[in-house]
Length: 327
Ligand code: AMP
Ligand code: TRP
Image (cartoon, rainbow, N blue to C red; front, side, top):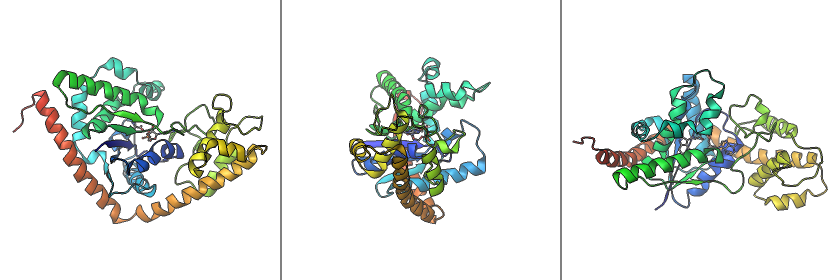
């Protein structure tokens, strides 16, 4: 049986980019293979976090996982810090990787650029991510395309380890969506939609009110020729809106172009507001039921038990290959 593993950071503002690039795939894969999904709280402390908010955001993401359609009967859902093997393997991988390869990671370069001195955790971040994936013998990692480089590094480290000690790790593959692996910011379609951008209208969060969704879409940056055509290079703004429309409506981009032939951007935007709000209403209704329920903690505890069983087996294998004394 094949297995997929992925994780999302509990940093608030889970947006439709996260949904389209990652969460939607998580749900689809549940019916194709074993699926393990984590809330990666230890990754989020690579930058300063308010402890109270971190706790709330961790449970928020867990509730969102369930609200978008993850089913605890099908998927293992757990919090990264509740399974100690993640940090344990991460150290072992740190000893099998090079500072040169870590310093080439674009996410590290972006995140450390404006800082006078960057926390070491930002630098070793991809090794904790590699540990997450390799612990579960995952063949597939469903993520947005900003994470592709981290998966490549994970593959390199897994292969290096296997070559040195004999077959130990499954070498994983990046799994991206055909449509929407990189959703762009609404206010500037040359940047990716991000949780941390200052302008809140640059993104649509899954928990946004209908009014906020409307404002964000109506304000979205487009071009001035008013022709509704998918052309990412020359018309990134309208192409991004078409992608979002396609994912939330289930219509092909070509059919949407046909539907709006001769119409202006205003009409497309107005309809897109409805399409997005219709989907978010369902997610938010479920979210409000689950977020405060005791069921949520029960699911996370069960997830932890299952994750622990799998990851401990991997750790035993790794430790014995390395020559760490076991008794
Ligand atoms: P993060 O919040 O950084 O943990 O990201 C969660 C998931 O969402 C990862 O798989 C990312 O690759 C994906 N993701 C983040 N931003 C975008 C975006 N703008 N478009 C598509 N996928 C994204
Ligand atoms: N680095 C990923 C992100 O920022 C989150 C993540 C951590 C992850 N560990 C992972 C994704 C393991 C996939 C698999 O989006």
